[in-house]
Image (cartoon, rainbow, N blue to C red):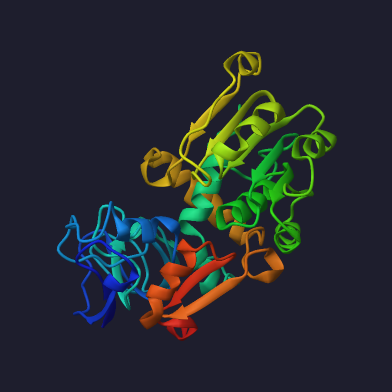
Length: 345
């Protein structure tokens, strides 16, 4: 089978198209014929490591955490069915086998049945972005650990950077859970994407006063901030928090450090919490997977221009370009076509 591998850290040029034997699933595992591999920022960052030429944890690594495909072999005790369409998550976390290959073997619970009507492209776009968004939203004071329709009723969510993959998922999941959603973007094209995702209010932070606009939308402040750029937005976030609010930080766009005005924030009883989906509690991952699947089944979570997340699909042999596109901030979701829609046929 065809697979992309690398044996040392470095730029996208370390990615090599190779031939490998088709693996067999062991106890509790399934083998998936991969249709699409989803590329996330952590995929190219893991490949780069701390610098070029460093040794890896494994002799050879297949990149990419997320994907979609069809189960084509089932190991003992896996309790799954050959022919199931699935979405894949965290395939390469602490493992050598990511989704950038024609077949991947994973623990059965990392291959989640894809609801009827959901495309394989959508399946490959879920994983890390949607689970990150779910974790950020479920940190709201008094919110259930697993979101569902109405779970965030009466709350206001601010998504900083609503045109990114996590931001897009956060908008859609928050709307599904009943929240009022405001988001910030950097220009009119991204504003249109955020509107298509379902945001009630979109604020262009380059042209508008964010604090005034958000306060006009939610006079009492926001209950959750899904934060992509804490350094750039710390002062604004501090002015926008309702009492008991949480700022969920999942990225460091614009810098690693940010100040907090302690005296100002004491009375808000607010929380600032970091979110890295790989290291959140296992139960939080289980809850996220269940909620994301439910949202997809309800038609509340989608991809494509009409849902505010354009798809950019490149063939397997051009995976280096896919990684570079994500590293350069391509707006939308970058997918690598491994077997494509023919897999389901």
